[in-house]
Length: 601
Image (cartoon, rainbow, N blue to C red; front, side, top):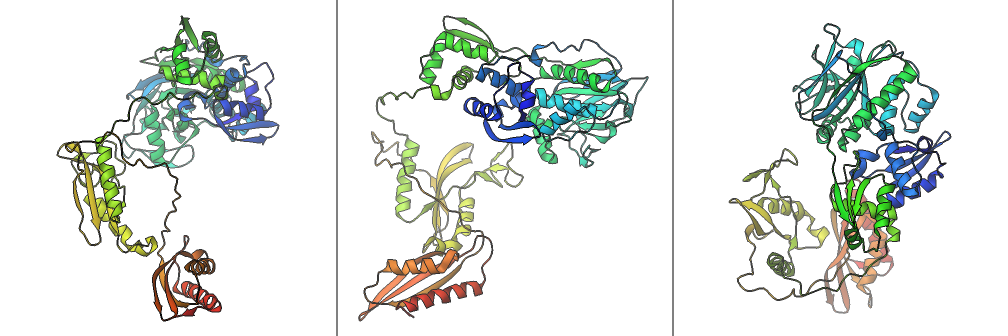
């Protein structure tokens, strides 16, 4: 989220520190900063808002409130504290919601606007967001979205069909195959899972709910009467629609985060007031369909719990100070806080959420490390884990490599409710198909892996006969795939403690190239006293980056001479190598070895 420091300053009477200090404050107490950009005379912070705070901090108001708490600078005003007066009702517009995926839909009807260029201050505000100015009405709705986080849209009422001088807007699921020309001049084909805004009298789609407006009711310089939309749509539905249509917008990003339905009223009032001030017109009235208003929630936490979780010695006054700085209403009695989250703080649901608020506002750097208590008693032995480790140790000692394959299959007993893809919609009932596939993929890489035979095993869950079963499957190039229930050692008796617990290790893994490799062998008589390490160093250096692996695979002595045979693997990560490239490399390696006294056989 781009945040203009000039815009932020409008929320404070006290001058804010420079952008770097603001960035540091947010980084240490709330969100990381991806960068600071100069836009004209403005400095713009690129704030990496975390998903759990998208409902309130994808806005200048949200970031201003965070900075107010962190820097202890009071807000000059808070638009959410003002009453969103939508009391002037009109029957010139009716709203029908035929879906459970729209919690609230507010419409404001304004007549007599004069559409034209936006004032310079508004153009500059949108430019700091990377947005170009369109016209004063559209710019006003975009400004309010970036200001308080609520997406809005404006329709040209004159382009809707009126009956008896009245308009009707319907929010419904799209019909499969229904099309709409959007404001980006692209036609989108919709499905029943997509929410639509429709001119109910004409049956014509005028917007993809929460994503993009449509051309049929677009605002232009000839527009006189408008209907402003401020709604609350289901976040999951909007995300799926945006993904399916490959149409992710500033509006859809905000709805995806699940924003408070209370904000819609505040945003409607702000947008209408701004339009009146820069485009003129008269408010005829509002329609606010809000069948199930957002209920106030309460979360309780104690100072004792906060200190227990954080390892601190905070007082009741310390905790109270944090909640006050955050603008959270609370009642406190004997160290028990009953907190009333503000409507937009949908993330505050349990006591641990409040503990986190206290920690970050005080500052994690102020929380001193505390040693853990000494372990009490002995660690119990998990029978499944112990059995798996014993089998794993045995198979690895026999040259098997462990694989982990997908639990999804193209057949099975259990269908996946939320399909990962349309190809494998079942949970597997056997390890064998995926083990066989893994063998086929890897058996051509023996030389690269320095193996004489590919031998694989997997320990994993299958869903069979109505149960979840842990199975052991094995396969090799010489032995067919087979599986059995993982041996359970419960009947033999478990040990009192784990045997030979492995030490924590770190290993670096490198992916294979997707392009095929070429194998070459080179054999030579070595000069007396030569060590194999010297030969490998020469091959590695002279083979270059195309020689990805080399190893000694045969050696013998005859009279006073020693024969060495190396296998060289050539492969590129960006292309398929040609025989000519490899032949040239081999010739170069042979020549260098010859110069050093080796006799190439």
